[in-house]
Length: 302
Image (tube, rainbow, N blue to C red; front, side):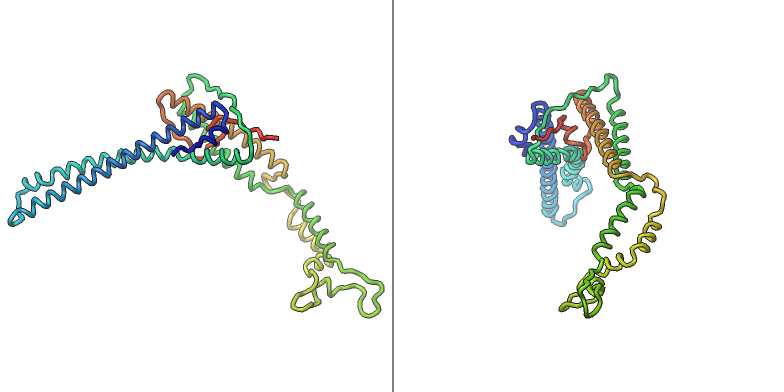
């Protein structure tokens, strides 16, 4: 079954559509080869079983079931020869399955296209990537993939980057102010029986049915605001941790890395296509960008 339905193909611009049809055709061809290998191996197993059964029946027809080694070799020879054939067919099947597995990236590309279509994202063909003549495609692809691994590591580092102390303190003080305001008791100057400050209610010391009334945590923050602030500020310290980034710096770095990654992936795909034209097969990465594989850019509809 084709990965790209006619509906999905209609969502692609002309060059990308032709690329999707080509990749789908390669995948179907790999599946056909795998099925042929599976069928041939299954047939060989059946033929060996039949040859073994025939040899055993010939043995059973012998009065004392005693035959010479030569006769036994003659009887079981066909089954042994098929066994050698089976070994070759297993190798053929393994290679065919490996080639089929190499197309595992394509359903993910189709899923991405489905989501883009559902989100009403308009697609257009990207400018072709110029590949310098005389470049060793295999070596350059290896270099690109090492760079992509480095980008992945950098993305993980940026994702876990600590925040600057100034931002941490700002958000801490804002939280303390919010909790203190929330936990502040109310005052009623008209009260003539009991305390005018409703401490019991603010500190969750009153009981209504089976539930406590008030917010004791916020009340404690209000009551010990300065001490809590000073201790928390001391916990944060005054020195940024290595690699600290603001939210704006972090998002800018993410965007920079994503742009660089996509540029490398587009070059990688161009090299893979050129290698294929020259009879050299290069396996695509399972996580390669659909934008690079199909050679497209996205333009969200207004």
